[in-house]
Image (cartoon, rainbow, N blue to C red; front, side):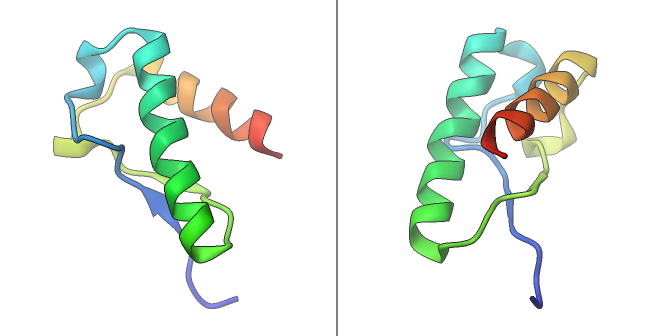
Length: 68
């Protein structure tokens, strides 16, 4: 109720330059920290520097499916 919670990654890398495993690790690390502190589900992602490609989007969507 109120606000949606999102992540921006753990260390602010250029996401499109990472391999799939590194992207997943960035998401897992940041989402885990946010959810532990807020006790709320993370549902949004804004890649640092606005840097993303289709792989980054797909990996985030698959990551969200595994959280639910």
